[in-house]
Image (cartoon, rainbow, N blue to C red; front, side):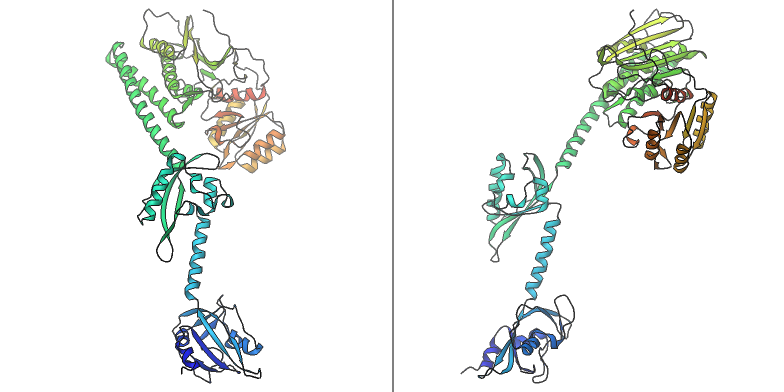
Length: 599
């Protein structure tokens, strides 16, 4: 007949007993295996473990272990986990079940303890928690579903991408986020998974809660039960909408670049042919051809700065008429910021190059006393047309040409192709040209001073004459961190009769000067040694002191809330500088609409 000890020895779980004082009286082989050694019967107390720890790693004295508590309190202890360390240093997570033993009279005579090795379960819980954290924090949507397409899990990223909260989508069919035309694809994927076949990563489209189509990258993995049977699928979804849009934009840009390169080569070919045909000598051809190619190159540089979207009229004037050096005191230019599309920008650049070249060779700019006034804006009677007024004066005697040169032909034909026109008049001391050009859309019409004479006219109006008010006695504060530039500004304004304060080259100095005195106007560097001047602009505004930003950056670099302020772009001429100060001081000066000439 099998004894109780033999039965306990045969159990696959660790079991041991103690007397009432906790001395171990029996243990089976499973217990010895769990402890990693064999304790001495009748001597070792409470537990055969080499060392004991609480689940959080704190040492657990043997006389405070669950078996000791059972013997002290005379009742079973349940639900306490512990860690046993073996002599070789390995550790075992276990769950004890100590139970008191009593004789027939109820007297406590010892206890029996069953130790469940839960190391594997503990590791599985850790792994499960780790995976749950990964799923929760993942930037990719992680979705699981059954083989019949019912959603069983839905993480936060899935909510961000598709808009559904987990509570409203779990338990629903996966087809809620699949376009109708792709439902058959989903059925084929499920069939492949059920057969144990591998699903390669692929890209597809899904539908968000608000109806948006979302480009996604999708990975599908089969879910198995413990017998290896496929019971569902897990999907990892990455939103690739931005990447797809970038790819489309890249393709469009490549196509656009290809188109522009070919058009540019055709333009160069035409310029070469026409220049050669109308040139009096090889040297004349080289000069004319090189000038037109350089004009074309400058125009394309402007376009690349705006990602080929277009160019501003003022920038075109700067590059083609002022030739990038706005120290040309004999040229006055004014007009609002008007964006032209890329094609129109290139064509207008060539037109202005021809006019500028003619003025420098034969017109007003060919003699010391000559002057060129160039103004542009929206036509007063038609807001969809750009009006450019070119007026040369004090030049050599002008005669009407007996033949049409390539320059004038290019101007007339270019404008005609764009739906515009030019009216050219030859007066005794200079040529005038009025250009009318229809433009599809105005990107902006804020006042930006590109050169000598700024316009303070509202959109659609231009001053008939430049502002010409005295600056004598006017107090102007200069805030500029470039010493040579501030010295030049100071000399120019003092020459015009201004009382110059500053210059202030630092933020702190500028703050003190703004608070400490009164000024009629201020010129404010838009960036002082890398520091924002927003505080200075706000202080000037609070004190009702008119100011202009002086900067080599675009408007996007101006402080927030001041993008519509007057801007004096670097580099600039002395006329530019004085004109901007005049505009600040006399912005209420009477203005006369630019009238179209009747010829």
